[in-house]
Length: 235
Length: 75
Image 1 (tube, rainbow over the protein chains, first blue to last red):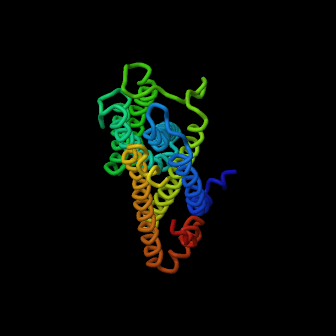
Image 2: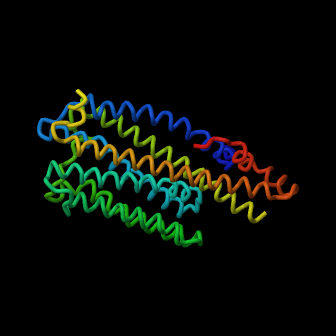
Image 3: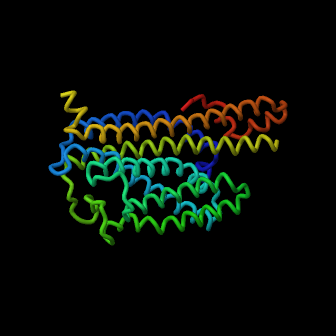
């Protein structure tokens, strides 16, 4: 069983996977863009500006999902001393940050025609900005610290502090009066979004998830080669 | 039809800029990640080439080294 987790075996899978993931990503993204920009209907209130939702919402979801995964991996990795979990977390972080920035920028673009302003210090928007700062702190920590023990400790603390912000982001629209609209999609109760809009949203989410998988695989391979480069120096 | 798609009743500028920003961010992140990958891989190949025969044979005995050297995918 353990032989499946040998670095050579892992690398043989992760190094071949990106080209297939890229191919699938392009297909799914093309379908998603066609649905989002052409086939989906305009909103009765927001008209065509609602189409921004198809990039804004998946980006926010994936950014939150990646940060939660990073936290889980860092904490478990720190408790059980699994170095590979930190490597996976490090490889996930860049796409998480980029999705967070996309969510903030597309949110600002959506805000102008809807609220009449690019930015408001609203609870949802501010907490998303705070999440971006945690992503930056996490990535900067990887650049600053060279001692692994210190690095794993610091990055775990950053993710634990950052994860407190995740439920705040999720429930900010319910806890406070915000400009941001409440969630239209609920897993546990009936969603208020029509299927003609839900379908493109799901397709675009799948495309974004594939893109983050692609970046993760490429980054993870780079990190593995980096470690092997250090190993060659010691030979 | 094309005009309708581009203008979107006056919201075209907002919608297209949001989509273009997203796609541009994807492209930048992809290119940065790919450049880092190619750089590390070429560093590995040059380091491997500079090893003497004994060390190279030892290094080659590790499966991951063989995988890195044999993998020609540029993605």
